[in-house]
Image (cartoon, rainbow, N blue to C red; front, side, top):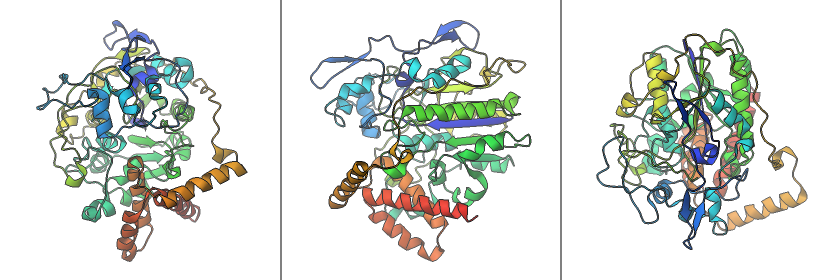
Length: 502
């Protein structure tokens, strides 16, 4: 019987990018032999000059240029350059004939003109020993899709609320969005955390840094002290025999305050993927060695594909059916009938048979559907009401005893973040020059930073007098990218000081 569900969601990686060359074989949930739907090596995209660029391995441990993954980027990636989705969309579960996954290289050439073919590089199993070991030891879902063809923020909302409230791109903010600015994003039917509160069940969010995405949901600021804890306390907490949390959501260290997402554990494309591998190893081994292992379920997934190639065409879906809570953030008049690109998802529990490969179609709301069924909670929207659950995977009558206590060490990337080694004079001068250029040519806040910038505002409002709220918001709306990162750095220092002072 599962009593504790742990969910960790990392950043911006497609299924083929991480596991396409893993060649994993096993059995499906009914016990029949099967193999992962991965890559053959013949899959390709056309370069801007018309050459066929095939998938290849290995991939770089980190990238200098992050791929595009806003709504318009994903449309080009899966529909091809100049392509668009069918209107009306095919019935739920069907394939849009306009989608052929042909535009990854053409889109990435906008961001990296020198080496656009690198978007087709995929990791080898030896580069990701932690993820690959977990995939072979438990269950891997090879038809799990992000909840919409768009970026991080709306996809993460779907795992919390089975909806993004109409948000179809990275959020934007103005004075007209005062309720969002001050309180966070609202959803007609609330979130999974409201459901747990109503059912009087304990839950917790463990965060690797001061800017967890979940804090941007309305009502979460009031829960900051009770229901948010730093990740470095997780191992201690879960080792307590009295640990009572029914649901735990874990967010990595995004390191967004740097403006480059480097030095964290989120596996953001601009960061070292091996840091995320170490995070997964820590999470699994903490749960595996705890007194709660036999009653636990760990789900590892990724919010969206981050612009990386995947060869499987995503199907259509049932839209949530709730209202657009912030019309100004529905940038593309999207109807939420199309799922996003395939992402890796692992289902880990002693009740899951070793070597399971599940070909069923899922999206992030399958997490909610599973949780709701296990704990007798109601659905939030039509999307999670109709989503495929994971319950058929928990078929073992007695918990396995052969699950590994420890996982392999992560690969050695050779990359060491400068914050951990001290800044050289050259590095400090380079950073100073970058800062001066940013001040002289200030840019609007980068889309990938807007959400984290907003979480910093919510923390600022939380710790400031009510009378200062309007002025804090006015300053926030005037920020450019360089000011946004400096603002996040200040709020990060203040949060640390607040914690130190009790």
